[in-house]
Amino acid sequence: MEQIRHSYVDNGGLKLHVAEIGSGDSGVVVFLHGFPEIWYSWRHQMIAVADAGFRAIAPDFRGYGLSQQPPEPENASWSDLIADLLSILDHFSAFKVFVVARDFGAMVAYQFALLFPNRVSGVVTLSVPFVTEAISINTLPEGFYMLRWLVPGRAEADFGRFDVRTVVRNIYILFSGSELPVAAEDQEIMDLVDASSPLPTWFSEEDLTAYAALYENSGFCFPLQIPYRKLDDVESVENPKVQVPALFVVGEKDYILKFPGMDDYVRSGTVKNYVPDLDIKFIPEGSHFVQEQFPEEVNRFLLSFLKKHSP
Image 1 (cartoon, one colour):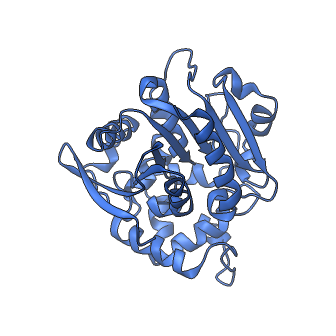
Image 2 (cartoon, helix red, strand yellow):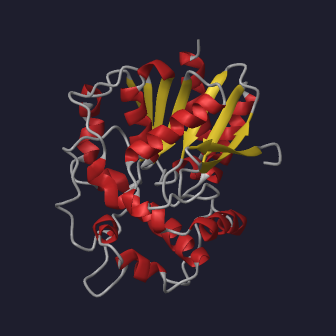
Image 3 (cartoon, helix red, strand yellow):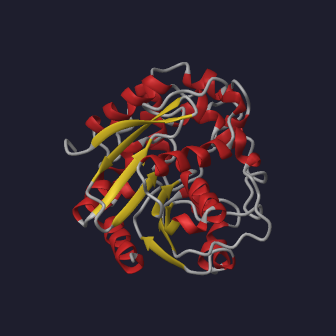
């Protein structure tokens, strides 16, 4: 971890934090995090690809971790994240890269690959595949966490009852389960986790401290905008077809597979209508945070893909 370098990239006056490691002799790999994550979520993968000769670059999205807050987070857009990614790649003179992403970062990765295919060698996503409007959360109960967090002020009030460390802890415990997080009418999402519940065995108190420190810096204002309150604002591409090689890794116990239609969408191969050159890997005991839970397995799949599709 001490070998990881930290710097800032300026994009239109907004400072974006970037962690990096490796020489880049074999190519460049960009890692995009999800929620409630930051660059640190990729620590195991960054070291693995650097040891294999690649340069690993892992930014904190704007409004996350050590990156600067945009002045009007309520006006956040997904195109801002695309522009930030372009700025970071140009800063590091990385014309063509592999993009590895998890959770909502997968939406940024695939959007980038659709808009700038000449700059992408391949896409790897964890937990979230390429998704279309056919996958909807609107049929889920009102207490489903994403629907609750769509409501301005509701998550802020829920989170505000606890310190940042407890909020991150609760979300990690909750999202590590295999069931969709749904609160009863008289509950808030944070109430779904008992104070006595232990952290997942693969997530240490030291890890929690690292996350909590970075979310104490950033807060949750921007993360509640992107992804949750801007899900319907992703720029659509007519007849989308991802032209680059891709890999999707998902845990069999990831609650994402219980989204309406998601499991069939993945297992039936319907997703390949949009991503023709897609390889799908399942990790039997894997949960939502599969890259932290089973880093060796994820690294094996990742390195095999990188080596197969490197120039």
